[in-house]
Image 1 (cartoon, helix red, strand yellow):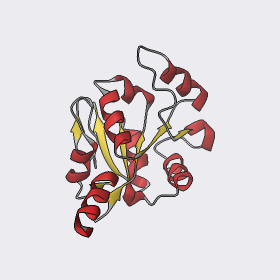
Image 2 (image 1 turned 90 degrees about the vertical axis):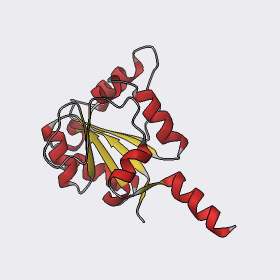
Image 3 (image 1 turned 90 degrees about the horizontal axis):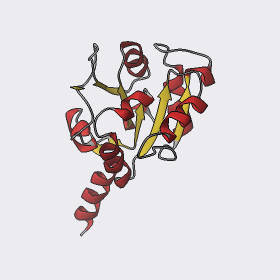
Image 4 (image 1 turned 120 degrees about the vertical axis):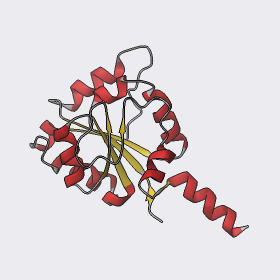
Length: 160
């Protein structure tokens, strides 16, 4: 079975809707890498946004890429493909969470299973109003995959 090893967020705005902290905590507790593939002008802008607010999100991401950094804008898949390359992971082991049609098309074109938050788009595996109450394990199960820690626990139980 394919194992999810990373989650790529398509917008910093996704992290300010509902309980994004709970989702991030869940993913990080399972050893999953987190990335931001943003359509904003630069990763500096995203970093400043993430550092604001009551509970800073700065430092929670293993990777941050903006369209500006790669010289292509969504719906071009290049930023997502660059993220996959930098993570050293195939698209089957990564999911994307997007909040726009252009971002959704970019993630899907990169071969990623893609979930929508807010308004849906064609090809989304599932649409959520926010990330509140959503777990990575639920997303993985929706597309017939397992989460990294879940698979590791499963393998350990077989060896016993």
